[in-house]
Image (tube, rainbow, N blue to C red; front, side, top):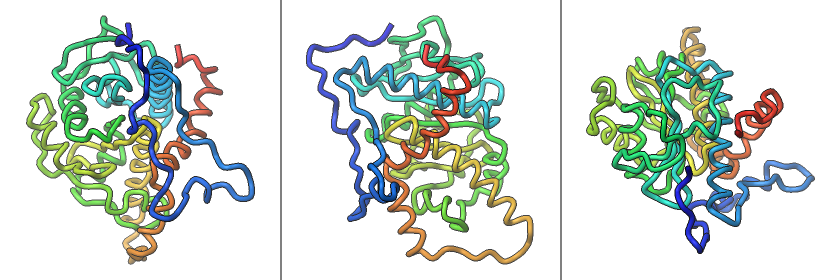
Length: 288
């Protein structure tokens, strides 16, 4: 059961992100001497957009499962409904990431009432507090990913931001924070609110003693950033373990890489090989 559609289905501007980063056309720069890469698709109706979002949400879970991010009933992805700003879709409890389907998702409003989707399912209470707080605070955010991935948890114990030690981590240059006010499992609304405040206007936050959280204008963007942040934590731990002096990228270099690689369109595109691989392996079964 999906939220009802209205007679006039004009998608909001927030679902039509810009492809520009300052004066650099990042998407055009990604493809050398060939057609420009396709960006985020646009649909004629909310229902088509909603179904596409749920399919990509389920696909992101399948990627997370293959990457080893599943941990009991911990970890969640949410996607704001394209029609109703005060509603979002989130995964049910007790369904493994590797078995998630589009039809499993539950639609709730910001007060926690189930208003659509898999109405027989239950959602993670801590997940609701975190995701609802971020969706309230950030109207530009349409998707949120949070997992208890291994290297993310390990790096979170240091309560330090990632260092700009390679090209890829620059996707988080001055766009990630560290949440150091850990208050236990986030079953209280205040914990979610503090996490949202720590995130600020950034793309990600490292939750001390907890894990990672990323956001995006599409679930693809947020999911790619989660995968990248987890790998960046692993790289940071490996580099620190050597004891050798690290060579940091300059602010100018890091800022350039960020401008080129961190637009919503490019981050959406970065996730498509992962999504396509899951389509191939699962024969698109997760879209059901």
